[in-house]
Structure formats: C-alpha cells, structure tokens
Amino acid sequence: MNKRKSLILVGALFTSALLSTEAGAATKISNGISCTAKQKNTTKTQVTKDVTDKYVCTTNPTATGSAKTKLVWVNQDCLDMDGFYKSDVAALAKLKLDATATATQISTQVANVDAQKTWRSLACAKGY
Image (cartoon, rainbow, N blue to C red; front, side):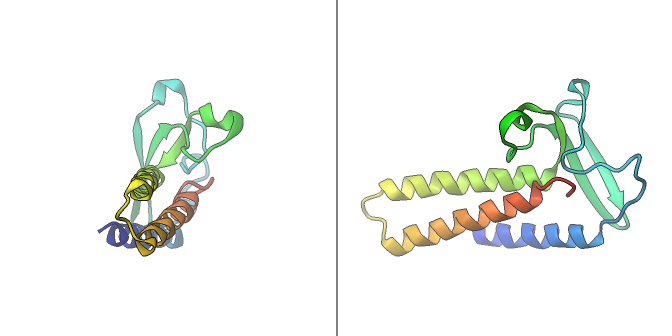
C-alpha cells in the first residue's frame, strides 16, 4: 500500500514540476519563500496552467541549521512526503526489533526509506 501511495505521489510531483511555469514573479509562491508569523499554518493555493499546488506557512522539515526555525512557504507535497518518510523510518525501526523479521523484509523496508527520503528531498527543495 505504501508503495502505491509513493508511486501516485511521485507521479503527481513530476506532473506538477513539468507543468509549472512562472505565472507572475511578484505573486509566485514556492518552497523556501519567506512568510510571516501572522501567516503561520495558513494555506495558500498557487494555480499555474491547470495545476493547483497548496502551500503552508511553516518550517521546512528538511531544513538544517538556522533555516530549521525560519517560517517559509512549504508545498503540501513536501509535508505529505515527510509524513510518509517518518512513517517508513518508524516501521523500519519496529521491523529491526522484530525477532521474526527476515533479512528480505528488512532490506525491502530500507529501500522504502531510501526512496521516501529521495522523494521528500525533491518535494521539499527550494523553488518547487
């Protein structure tokens, strides 16, 4: 089921990336654009051609250093992928503690975690 969700989201991410264009530089919202504390947890919709992207004013889950606490617009796909990634990491930890887990099950889950990390990095990249 996780694999299917991942494939659907990956398709949506690539479609969105391929179809997005600059609608208006002054009003364009993308990952990494600063937002204010007053806007925290609000959602804005960006429509480009026939693609609708939703952005939330929050901290980017993949940010490091001082950027970790900076409020920026983050694509909802990024937040969704972060949730899937964290879920897969927790499932891997649980699987490693399971005495009945096979090496194949563990290696499959490791591959899932690696794939989710890649998709999360793409979805959370600045400018997406």
